[in-house]
View 1 (cartoon, rainbow, N blue to C red):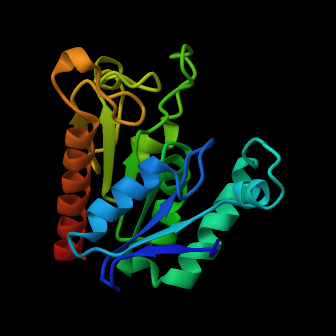
View 2 (cartoon, rainbow, N blue to C red; view 1 turned 90 degrees about the vertical axis):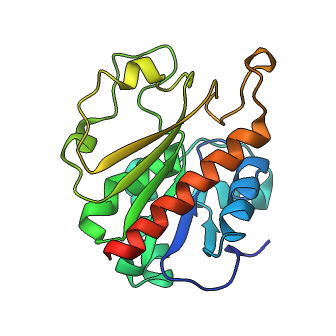
Length: 208
């Protein structure tokens, strides 16, 4: 497989999108989101962190690299698809978290997090929000209302920067999937998530 997956034609801004901890850049979720965003005229460029690329090569399951390595990889890809002020960076879960960690320093157009891991499941006391309190870069976090990594009720109690906006996917889990009894479908939530991302990127374009 190619090192980068590109959906849509070149655009400014474009979206550089990283995967989550456990699934690759061509997972069903990543593909569904990328296709929807690209259909609105925004190019989506997907890439993999080193540990996931190695897993693809040898088939051996391995955990994520440590943060410094993930950060270095994100910077490497941003340099290739930049300039940074023409790129919105983001990702699924861990990928979005790493994007949010480098955004202010990198000078990107914006950040888009799809299912932010505010805390490990079942460990709400282990918050990963310190850097989000001082965030300067315009950021969109798209989150399922019942995400085990941070529910709507939990996130309402967090101190987050005014630069961060939230879009809630009704009854969605960490991948926005709702329960049948909700009357919602995964397709509806994916459509809504993509629309929120597209609208956010358009606002980044207007203010860039």
